[in-house]
Every structure is written in C-alpha cells, then in structure tokens.
Amino acid sequence: MTLHAFVAPYAMEATLRFVDSAVRLPGVELVLVTQQAEQDLPASTRAALAGHWQVGNALDPDELEGALRGIGQRAGRPVERVIGVLEQLQIPLGQVRDRLGLPGMDEAVSRNFREKSRMKDVLRAAGIPVARHRLAHSAEEARAFAGEVGFPIVVKPPAGAGSAATFRLDGQEGLDAWLQSAAPTGASPTLMEEFLVGEEHSFEAVVRHGGVVWHSISRYLPTPLEVLSNAWMQWVVLLPREIDGDEYAGIRAIGPQALQALGIQDGLVHMEWFRRPDGSVAVSEVAARPPGAQITSLVSWAHDFDLFDAWPRLMLLDEFHPPQRRWAAGAVYLRGQRRPGSGQGEGRIVAVHGVERLQREIGQLVVEARLPQPGQPTSSEYTGDGFVLLRHPETRGVEEALSRIVHELRVEVA
Picture 1 (cartoon, helix red, strand yellow):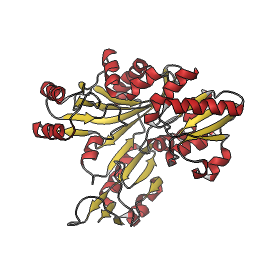
Picture 2 (cartoon, one colour):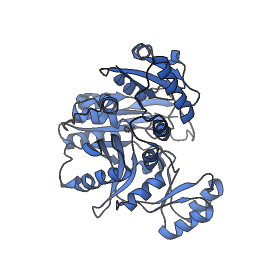
Picture 3 (tube, rainbow, N blue to C red):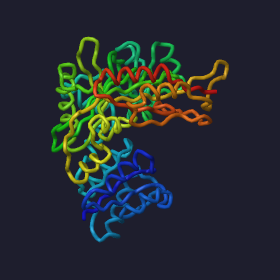
Picture 4 (tube, rainbow, N blue to C red):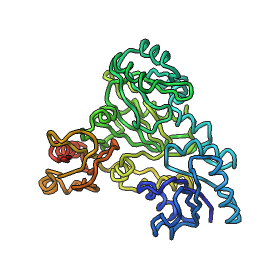
C-alpha cells in the first residue's frame, strides 16, 4: 500500500467526489488534510480514509509540510504524493513537493499557471498568441496601458481562478471610477488585458510524461465576462460531439505547445481560449486542475467514463486510459430574474416556471440536474442558482435542447 495525502481546505461537494474516488484506488492509503474537524466530514468519507489531519490554514506551505511530516511519522513511512483540486492550493502544494522531494508539479511550474501575468509572459515568449497585458502597480501604469491598447480592457486579479473577480472597463469614465475606488499598488497589483473578441472555448487536456494524450473541447455561450456583467443571464457550456475536424485544428496545435511552454509534465488542465473573427486562436488562461462549473461532469457524460475517478488515478497511480467522445453534452446554468418592482440586491427564489413542459418534451435527454427551490436564497456565484446537464448523440440535438431550456425555464426572484 502506498501512502498519499489529499489537501482540501473544506470538504466541498465536488472535492469530495474526487476524494471518494481516490480512496477506492487499488493499493492507495489516503489521508485527507483539511481545516475542518474530522467529525465534520461525511461518515462514508471518514470510514474510507486511512486518516485525517487538521490544519489551521491549508494554504500555508509551512503547515502543509508539518502535516505531511506528521502523517508520515504516524504511519511509520513517508507520504509519497500530495494532491489537491483547489486553484489556490497549487503554489503551496508545489512548494511542499519541492521541500519534501515529492513527485508532481513543483513551485516554479505552479507559478506559471497560477500567476496570470507570468503565464502570459511565458506563453508570449514561446510564440503562443495571447492578449496584450500588463501587471499594473499604480494608477499611472494602468492609465498608460489603457492609452496603449485602447478600450475595452479586462481587469482581473493577478492570481484569479477562472472568471472570478474579473470585469470589463469600456471607457475612460469606467477607468477613472475604478482607479478612484481600487487603484492598483505595489503591494496589490492588478492584471490588465486587451479585450479579446470572438468565440470563447475551453480545452481540457491530460498531460502524461510531458505530452498531451487526450483532450476535450467545449464552448461558452455567451462568454463568461458577459455572464458576470449580467446577473440575470442564463448561460450555456456546450461540448460538441465532433472535435477532431478542421474547426478545432488551431487549438489542437496551439494547446499542446502552450502546455509544453508552461512546463507541466503530468496532470489535467483547463485552458480557456478564444477563436477570433478571422479564425485565429488566442489563449486566455490555463489552470493545472480539474475544471469547475460542472465541466468535469459534462466531460464524463460525453465520454461514458468517470473523470472524477480518472484524475486521482492519473495523479496517484500514473494511469490514464483515454476515452472516446460518444455524445454531445451541455449544461444550462439557471439564474434568477426579478419581478418588476422587487428592487435590487439579494433575493429569494419564489418560483421556477416551465419545468413540467420541458420535462415531458426533452426530459429524456437530461442526465443530471439541480433545480432552484422556492425559498432558496439567490446565489452570488456566476454559475447561478441551479443547473441542467444533458446529452444527445448529435450536437444539434444538444444545442436545440439547451436553447429551449434557456428560453423556457424561468427562475423568478423577489
């Protein structure tokens, strides 16, 4: 039996799916490191674990190092690998691997993925097309960048996760208002980027021994930045069935080159990219972790396999069996729309309209769903108040069903 550690600050539902898969791997003894007390974990998870170790701050590499050393002392043998799915964990995990001589992504490579300005510098140096960008440390630097590239401009934290805390500045008035309220400083810089126009997609890939051995492609409709700017907007992720034709040749060529430049040797990555109106490809961001927003589930449904199982198997046992794309799949993220005159700010869901008809007419395509419930408070997350996942043998069948849900299922908020 080999001893491994899985770090998860809190036992979130999606994280526990990876943990529960990891503990079932043959020959694996898994210790879970969390900020939560052991008794706060689900009973089924506690029963399957080889152990639990509580820390005060799971993002602190010193605490993580102490935890892994303590686990090893308690077991009488060292921890052989440490993994975690949270974006913010990747640098601390890399630091701990370096200190303890553990396999996996080291600190330098983890910074290539986590620090977005550094990521784009690395990619640009390798000839990978990316948006023009600058890590602004002052209002003067921010204004200078705006003068160079023009508006609109995308503003984001330098170590963000996906589209979180990202917004768009459309003109000088917006720039001035932002600088007045939250100007970047030397201690708190802000990443500013040229606004890319075009279709936004993701490229999920498994890298093994330095090479891409499998990939998946999805499309966001509309783009995440539009979704963040319009809290009422129900949006879609589409996984087309056919992804190996000329339509996606650009990202199939550039994606592996980008990953080689960033230095990952083994892992699952989530790359966001744009196809510009002229057909050219530009990489937006890359994360060295499983994708969020139900994309892990969508990939599983589209390939008739379990990515929640495949990721820990890859990371702990160095095994991966590339699946075939058998279905088109998609997700609709359900977001509340307010009654006229009900005001702004937080609210509660009062009704969900259109469910019965959609269930009768396209319910056979639904593979997973979490519908908002009356009385439920509205969510501040960009993924909204619920979701519906579905699949069909043909991409057009998924597109039509997704469109119907977006237009006919209405979440009413007051």
